Amino acid sequence: MSEISNVNHVISPTLLKSPTIATSIAVSSTSSASASNTIATINPTLASSASTITRASGTTPTTMLNGHVGTQFNSKSNFEDYSSSNEANYIPIPQFYAGRSVFITGGTGFMGKVLVEKLLRSCPDIKNIYLLIRPKRGQDVSDRLNEMLNAPLFEKLGRENPKELCKVIPIGGDITSEQLGISESDQALLCRTVSIVFHSAATVKFDEKLKLSVTINMLGTKRLVELCHRMMFLEALIHVSTAYCNCDRTDVQEVIYAPPYNPDDIISLINWLPEDMLDQLTPSLIGKRPNTYTFTKALAEHMLLKEAGNLPVAIVRPSIVIASLNEPLAGWIDNFNGPTGLLSALAKGLFRSIVCEQNYVADVVPVDIVINLMIAAAWRKATHKTDNFSIYNCCTGQRHPIKWGEFVNHTLSMVRKHPLESCVWYPSGVLRRSTTLNTIYGIFVHYIPAYLLDALARLMGKKPFVVKIQHKLYKAVECLNYFAVNQWEFKDDNVHALFHTLSPKDRNNFLFDVTNIDWLKYVEQYVLGLRQFLFKQRPESLPASRKRMTRLYYLHLLSKLVVVMCTWRFLMKRSKRLNALWTAFLQYVTKFLRLIPFL
Image 1 (tube, rainbow, N blue to C red):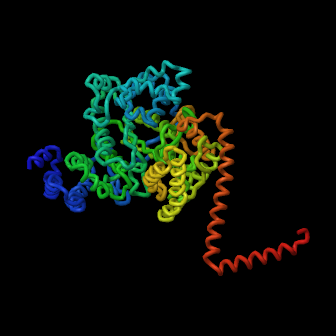
Image 2 (image 1 turned 120 degrees about the horizontal axis):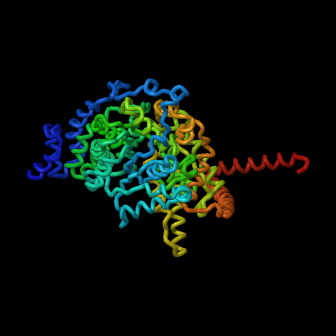
Image 3 (image 1 turned 60 degrees about the horizontal axis):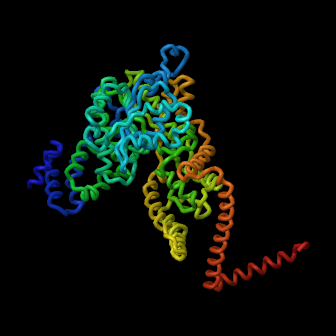
């Protein structure tokens, strides 16, 4: 009983008043009751809380959208296209950032690095950029910052204007800690100097435990908002979400929809429910959403709407973020997340069968497109203070789509043209809608060859590794399947309208118009980026790699011929009728050839 009373201090009053939740507390504290029983006691209370939405002051009235309640914004009424008539009042983006300081969470991540580099290079008069950094693997925050700034991403800036790098200042902290783990002195510094906040810290691991996902994606957001309320000169808070936070809908507007549960109730759950039971409950809690990432991102948006009050907030929702289009380097990528890991496996010849609907849109977006939109969204929020709580769906599927079949075929074409040095096999790929057929095919083209290669490695005295890689790839692909066999329509009217409010010069310098992307050229840059930045292979090695690819191609054809011949021979031995038909066919072919004069 003392355990239950201690738990009561951290549970919201709404939950404590419910007899069903009280029952669940007793169950969870005593035991090993089944998950299904616990779901029955918890879900009704949580579900009832989802029907109420708390609106932040200053937002427009809520609107019903296909049965969901959301806050909708009319892009046509809020945005005015740039023209000579308003040129006199226009503040260019670099001029706006001049003399202002920025605070970034997630600044050492993939998107964060590109954001830092872009601000330093394109807004040279920016005052300071404060990065929230946590110590990691024995490195303090200064060491991690120096490592980041020495990456290839910053080489050009380091050569041309090295003093700009001195504007990046590390702030020790941790998104999972109270008050973000920031010291009182650093909090005071941020509160009196920061004008713009970019919140991009998140766990993007799809199969993350619910407890950690809530702690980072939801509580981290709440703690940041608490800090922002104390900032004296805050002009814009940009929250990076995901277009897939509303993946339970096929038509996604630039609005905030009713959350699946009250965010505070979910936070209370993770605080008192044992983690093993929480893991059992997770599938029931996330419902139609495929993972904890999209679930907690949806709740984080609503929490932001509730906690922000009158803060100047904009939410940017990118779809699947991959390599850069142009800046700072074409094809720049530094991680194997999302489709990048799968395409790397295709390039290596390790993976050749994918569950995917080839005629569905692959809503991928280059990282520099997203970053330019974030920078422009902050500018817009600060220079147009009458704007409401703004939301931008940053996607390509609405204006300039590419289908999964095209995307994979372009990739295969380019990994054959620009092969990796150590391909295991000739790159090829088959897209299948059926999970069952894909699994059967995968046994023959993935696992059987993997076990054979590992057996060969053991005979040669080497360490086997291919089966282990296949297990990892299979797990990674399972996380992506949902996004490859479903399709969404992400409305991006606000993004389109915002782009047309920019001056021609700002449109060019902060490009986020996706309509002119040359997909074939982009995929080629993407593949070259994989080769250079992830596999650390130099362009000089391409001729030798192409020779090896040619050999693998002929070996691939030979293996297919051997499989066909062995299969045919097996069938011929098993069926006398088939043997007779084959003999008759050969006789007719021979007679026909004899009728040809020159033969």
